Length: 404
Image (tube, rainbow, N blue to C red; front, side, top):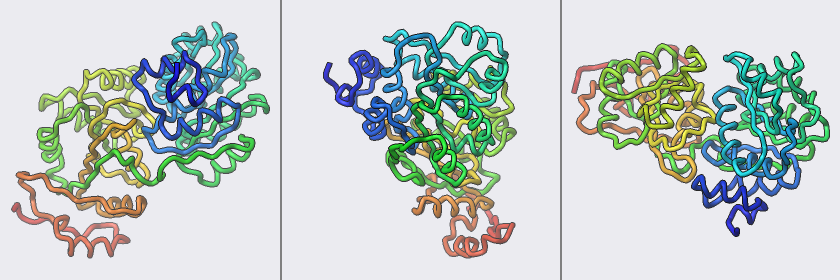
């Protein structure tokens, strides 16, 4: 079998599994990482979302491992959703092998996880907290780990997991191969990388501060009282396959979901107040097409691989500029195009400007034809400039006026 993937060194069985999943051409990070991982080298990589990062480490890992029933590969993920996603990818890629893949994460009981660990596995995807629990109880051992993957390390830093990560890494052999993926490299992560890696190859794909080129995105100015009305019309006017809507708060996500359901949309909701079963049902329902809309907080923004998301709508502007890039990175993935709309109110001007400064480029302001806008200084460039010059003030001077 002669394909672009076999040219990277992958065996025919893996190339066939990849082909069966519809992939024909390796992405840039796969082209760079696969040969290095196959040779046993350490990697520190950063790539924009939707670049095929999981396959870049999963495929060569599967090829390097032989099924012995011992835990030889450990993948640490910051959230259970990401761990589930990685475990699913490994299961699909390894379907023509005898490798056993297992997962452990918090928020659920220990029974099934204990049973799976006792049966033995070759590859384990895990969240740090639950894995430490199992290690401390003697339910598994990391003494035979040949390959360690630390994924979304910047997210682990945000969630306070780095001490747990260090404790886990210390229980793996020093001779292991380590693959380290992070979107950013602040001092704490750089220090961890220096401690955990040995002469790594650095792979950086795309500008970390920019959305993928396949995403068309714009700001839609609107007064706060008309946000949901504009959202509704955007959905009516848009030929979408599936829409991911982000809100800042859990209560906001629930409120928007209820309103959309009342208007006839099929909607899933995903945030940290939802229990594990509800979150899995929402995510699976969105992936399968049962829900045309998924309303979520930023818990779903990073790393989740949801194929076929045609549109992302930021109902609320994220306070963190980096989260904007991660949010809209849910669409336009793996060579597909996507659209992202962000509703910007008077109170969001500073955050919107911060996003533009972070990306180093302006974002086009757009108006929806036929929408009965209430006039706002958001539509007056001169007034908007005056407001931008006074960003230190806690209250915006933008005013509301009469309906035009």
